Every structure is written in C-alpha cells, then in structure tokens.
Amino acid sequence: MAISAKEILSGDVQAAARLMRDLDDEIPSAHRTLKTLYRHTGRATILGITGAPGAGKSTLVDCVTGHLRQEGKTVGIVAIDPTSPFSGGAILGDRIRMQKHALDEGVFIKSLATRGHLGGLSKSTIDIVNVMDAMGKDVVIIETVGVGQDEVEIVKVAHTNLVLVVPGMGDDIQAMKAGILEIADIFVVNKSDREGADRTKQELETMVGMNTYREGEWAPPVMAAVAQTGAGVPELLSEVERHWKFISREENLERYRREKARVELMEILKKRLLEKAVDDLSRDGVLDLLLQDIARKIRDPYSIAEQVVDHKFGFHLTEGARKGKGNRRR
Amino acid sequence: MKSVPAKKISRSRTTKGKRKVRVLVGKPGLDGHDRGAKIIARALRDAGKEVIYTGLHQTPEMIVNAAEQEDVDAIGLSILSGAHNYLFPKVVELLRKKKMGKVVVFGGGIIPENDIPGLRKKGVDRIFTPGATLSEIVEYVNKRIRPRA
Image (cartoon, rainbow over the protein chains, first blue to last red):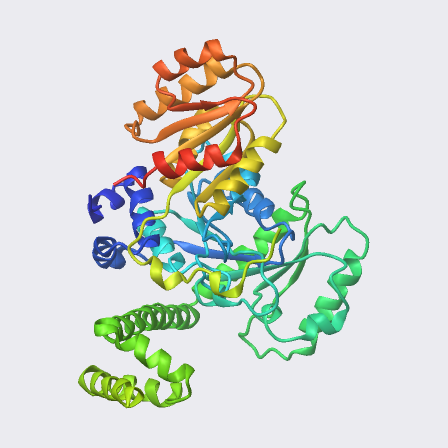
C-alpha cells in the first residue's frame, strides 16, 4: 500500500517507517510520495558523524541525542552499517549503543545497510533524511559506516560534519593526507582519556593551523571528548551550536542549500540515467552481446559509452550489436 | 571463513524494487548470554537478510518500538533466563496493540518442551530449543518470513 504525504506530515511512525523502507527498496510509489514531501523539507538541522570503525560514532550519537532531547529537540537518527558483499545481508548493530532512547517518542532511529553503495552512506540516505525532515524532526543525525580516508559523501548532505578520531591512529602525516580530514567542521578526539590523546589533538590543531582562513571562513575546532562517559560533550555541542549559527548566516545558508540541491539532483540523475541506459540496452539482450564484444576486444567500452551518451544506442547500437553477432558467425 | 570467488559478489543494481527481508534479533530480559543471538544474526546475514541487532537487556516495549521504526518482517528472540512464558507473549501482545500482528515472532533458548504449545497458542510462530541446527533456523526464516506487503 502506498504511503501518502499526509500520513508522514502528521507524524505517523509506522507510515514513516514504511515509506523509508520503500525508498530503500526503491519502490516507485515511494518516490511519488517524496515528490510531494520535498517542499516540506529544509527545516531540520542535519548533523553528520563519521570516523573509523570503532571510533565511537554510535556512542557519541547516543550521548548527543540525550543532550538534544534535554533541550526539547526531537531527533531523527539514520545509522548506516555495511552490507556483506557476498550474501547481500547485513548486521545493523548501531541500536545497541542507543538503548537510552528506545522508548522515547521524540527519537526515531532508522538502521540502514549500504547495499553496495560506496562513500559511507546508503543510496537512500538523502531520501530518508528528507522524510525525517518532513516529519518535523528538529535535528537529523547521520552516522556513516566506519570509514577510512576517502568516504566523504556525508559532507554534501549534512550542515555540520563531525569527524571522530581516536588516539594512536598514526602520525601527523596521516592527518595531513587529503580526504576525510578535510571535510570536518569540527574534529572530535574521542576516547580522550586514553594515552596519546593530547598528541593527537595537538597534531590535528597543527594541521588545521597550517591552513589560512580568511575572514568569515570557518576554521574547524578540535574538541576532546569521552563519548562513553559524556565528558567533553557539552563543550562539543556548544561548538556545534556555534557552527549552526555560522551556517545560518544568509550567505552561508544559501550556499549550503544550493550545494545540497546540486547533490540531490546529481545523485538522482546519475541513478536514473544509468538505470535507463541499462534498461534500454538490456532489451533484446543487446547488453550481453556488447559485453561479449568488449570481453573479446572486438569493441571498446569507451566508444560504446560514447554512443550511449549520444543517444545512438537505441536503434543504432541494436543494429551494430546484431551485425557484430553476424560477423562472428561468419 | 572460506574465500568466495569475486564473481559471486552480489551486484546492487539488481536489487531495484526488490524487498529485502528485515529481521530484528534481540535479547529480552536479564540474562547476559548473547552468543546464541549473535550466531543467529550472523547466519541470517549470510542468508542475505538485513538483521537489526538490538543487543542485551531489552524490554518487550523496546523491542516492539524498534521493530516499528525499522519496519521489520520478523522478530527473533533469544531467552535463556526462564522468563520466556512472560516475555514472548508480551512481545506478541504489544505488536497486536500496535496493529503490527503480521510481524512473525520466533525464538529460541532454554525452553522446556512442555511450554512450547502454550507459547504457540499465544502467537509465537516457532520455538527452537537447544540442538536446533543453524541450517534448520535459516531454512525456517527463508520459508516462513516474507517481506510484508
């Protein structure tokens, strides 16, 4: 049964849960509902939390959520865990560390599997954040899968990105590398009661200090916290608050909104165009023939991709492929 | 783990519009032995299911709330504490209260044979007792649990 936008806007938990699942499963009717919901989005503040596996992301989400609830804010949490590349199954275990909020009606937790999507998020993450936003959640927290160095997709989705680092993860050259460390709006040295925390914090501060920030630019602060005990989290949250104020300045917000709009459109286009191309090529088994030709080096993938993009694939490629088949028979 | 040849890696593009079975695995009550639950979670993952693992010391309310938000098709519970005659029916009852009666509840643990008919009567779909094999459980889930329409 298709879920209506009205059910979501009225805060119906089961309808929202179902819509989110439909979006994750790419059920067409769900995208229709999202079209209506879209203009109700844009009110929530989106907080991204990323870091290596075991850095304490879930624990921090739990702790931050507790504080936000005390301020009376409602919270949506999208927690992403990896899908097994072999079975397609997944164990989604982020809830284990979010028990405190299991009975709180002001908190909605959705666990998602990456389902083969790279970049730290699931394919459906933006859609599901939009649903939570439309539901009226004040803050939506996205917890990425445990990431390495280059999974930075989150940066385009969240208003504020926290990058979690733990002591003892390598020297300062690691910190200077490009990638994940560039996306932080705020660094969090978690488990800062451990040995080496001061050094890690110092190294990050040095790294940040090497950049020159112009007036009106945001220089990411480095915060120390112990998510397990909650130490340092109030200080962290006041930095988050400061960043929200920063991003709420007219010129910043406009830039953020436009950037998010670009990502949304590009992601959807990418998906749709690819689907359409693959669907069209798959008709009459053309795709298989083309793949065979490529594998046998009769054709090259570059030319085929070019032809597909130039809309030549419909009729022309069908002809070509069939000819190719004929040639081989000869 | 035996290694799996690269070509067996499942391709995500083919999942469009296909429902994936989602199962919540949890441990209600006070016993702290979650090895069994973890093994089941792992086996179901290997069978291609998305398993939401909620961990230890859950109340029936917490489990049903999580099941609601996660839109699962089934709930698998592991109980070794002896409180199964209370906990299982309570979960079923709460599901029905929320109009989620279609969510299949199954479970396992140290459960005397004599208690099983009563639990089944109260809406627990299947109970696995010590000695049940993993393949038995996976086969049950494969056959019995369908994505809710």
